[in-house]
Image (cartoon, rainbow, N blue to C red; front, side, top):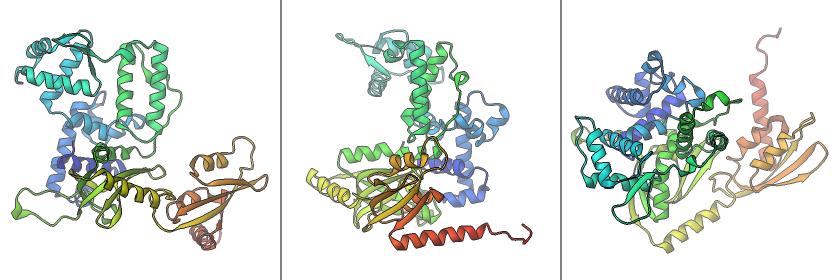
Length: 440
């Protein structure tokens, strides 16, 4: 899936999810770093994909691309990367052929030759008839991803759909499993696999005559569902880390205002890109849950390098390094990031803060949140209404928004200069809310 066009569509969909209708065509094109013509072409392509995938949308909703994602907010996390995953990752002939194989294996156990005959009979007239080598390649792929299983026995091998888990569950167990996957996939770190599993379980329930939507008693959603798009690079990166391979990529810093750089096939019209070409050894992936951001931690020409995942495009695998070199680079990163709230590698300092328990009785949400999110910090009781929180971190820039988010329930005590900064910031905020008219 790591093609240039896929990178472009990822950036396009991210902007659509985050900005909605705030930009006109020219502003969209400028922000992406493409021409208006390319913008229109990409929009048409995405609309065609949406047209093939949409189910249950009205004609009016289907006519506007953004409505395809927004018509039901609580189902809108399913598209985005999943939308591209389903529509772009397979050629049209592959998708039809694989669908035929999976459908027939739901109820029968067949050999590769039987499946070739079935596809030859069922493929549309204007599509080529697959040969045995193609069918065996499809079966190997489906077996690797866990969709089908090869049965024990001699040649010729027989295959069937891998439905044992679902088939052996009772109705109540299947409903419980769907509820669990639904909650986890919609509240934890976004995951393509989580939404795919949710969709599979939902189909299984429909086959048994259940509608999961009718039994919902509450709604919940992860706040940064557009970040699922960053997962397009995760598996390439994890593979490179596992195999100790360097990565080559074009990086467009989110601070530069451009999120994509077009590739021109004609050198006469080639223009200087806004991004920077990078070659680095990937070591770690870090997720900032507070802002919903992925970071790639690498070793490059300038030592430790940190990249926002949304700025990565055109990833390619490079040379392999020795195990000794990889372990050495990784050890340095782990030591320097030992006290990183997220990715900071500045000098360490101690932060001491006083937290105030809620006045009302019941759950102490302040204490519970500090315990859950405070990482390696320590808590000391001070009074019945307050407790102290102490932590050593690399710099304060990443922990500062977390402390600020507690509002009046948090008072920074040390370092003194940080306390003064907080006082100045709160005074500035107070000034914004001063009455403009004297009679208010």
